[in-house]
Image: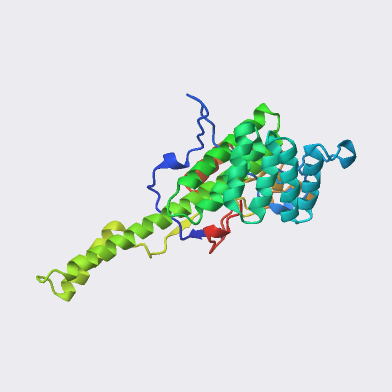
Length: 341
């Protein structure tokens, strides 16, 4: 009836590595961000906020600037970027940076995003760091830095870059309120949850690598023992694998049914309960009532049309995603290399 989740990891990993904590100064803690609503049908019906991926939040005309100004060349770079000509865009950004003596944070961020599109993560990272050094409140620079670190962390044999990416992305989100750009928060939360999901997968991969190495070493050790026959060795190996966990054994985890909306079959972000006692995703319930009238979408019982927030389910959903990052945007058979940043 409900989606089942498989190939995930043990539940005893330390939770502190998944905390939404960024410490820009002593004693400052950032709360857990809400997961953005993911139902595409509803999101297509609502006005879209400004997109963080865009080079310019406000379009400016070349006529407003001269060729001796960096902004003129940055606009040309933005235009080339939107056409997909990232190499040409970088050339224009180079000129913009040169004319401003490397003092404009946004120019480095724009060039860094173009480098990221070309797959040059190292140069993209350098530009993101330079943009942050010039302006530590540059939301898009922190976002770019986090995205590049997450992408780079996919191919590394440790989790340092991914953990740093989570900090950078969380810092970007904390800056939104102070700059009255809360409309970016949902998009940034999406990247934070994706980075945590990547961290979960990476930790599991590294854990399994250590288990396989331990099993291999123990097998070699047992083969050197002349006081054991083959049957005894196999029995000892099986006991050892059972004690540390089989790295090749598939593990099935399911999303609790009470967290799933009966309309969308997705984890609920804003759960509400009707007077019929059923809980649904708020926006999907509103849409169902508008289409079919005041009846419960599942039981078909008449309802008043009034509903109330289900705070317990909402808190349970946030707790579940905090402890089970794999559940965010989960797809059967997914590969962490395909997580988009």
